[in-house]
Length: 275
Image (cartoon, rainbow, N blue to C red):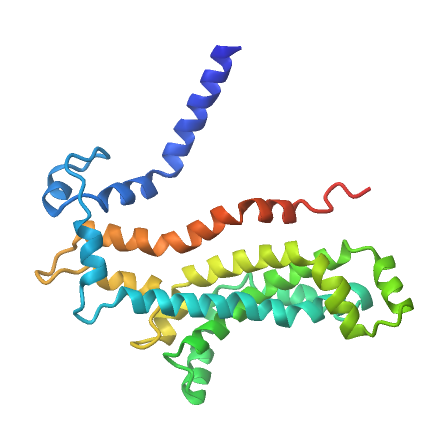
C-alpha cells in the first residue's frame, strides 16, 4: 500500500514538473544575474539575486511598470465588472421568461468561439472615430465585450438553479421586479458573480491582442508593456529582466485565482447533484 502511494505521488510530481516546467524555468531565471544566465542554464541557482526585479521597478527610460500595472488593473476591473452588471438582468429574462433563449443566447455564446482578430479592423475604426484609442476605459469596454458571453452563460445557469418559489413569495409580499431582483435573486447569485469576476479579470489581465492594437502610450497594459523590457541597449535580450517582468505580470491573476479557488470550485459544482 505504501509503495502504491509512493508511486502515485512520484507520477503526480513528475507530471506537475513537466507541465509547469516553463513557469518554473522563468521563475528561476528571474533570480539569476546576467552572468549566471549565460553560464548556468539549469534550474539550480548558484547565486540568487534580486537585481532583475530592481531593474524592472527602477528603470525609467520610457518604461514604467507601475503605469502598465495600473492600466491592466483598470481595464481588467472594467472588463470583469461591467459584463456582470449588463448580463444580470438579461440572464434573468432569458432564464425566467425565455426571452432570446432559443436564438440570442446561443448566438452570443458562440460568437466568443470566433477568433478575436476578426473584429480587429472594425473595432480600430470605431475606436478611432470615437476617441477611445489609447484609453483605459476603451480597453476595458472591449474586454467587457469579450467576457460577456461567458458571464451570460454562467448567470443564466445560476438563476435557473434558484427555486422559482422564492421569487413568487417575494411577489406575494408585494415586491416589484427591481426589488425582487436586488433582494432575492442577486444575493443567491453571489457565488456565480465571484466566478464570473475571477474568470473575467484573469481574461482581461492576460489579453494581449487588443492591448497591442488599441493602445500606444497612455493605456498600454502589462501584457504589452512587458515585451518592452526584453531588449537591452546593446540590442540583445536581457533574459533575467525579461523573466522578472513576466513573473511580476503573472502575480496578480495568480494570487486572485489562489485566493478565490474555493469559492470558484464551490460555484462551479453548485446544483450538480440537484435531484
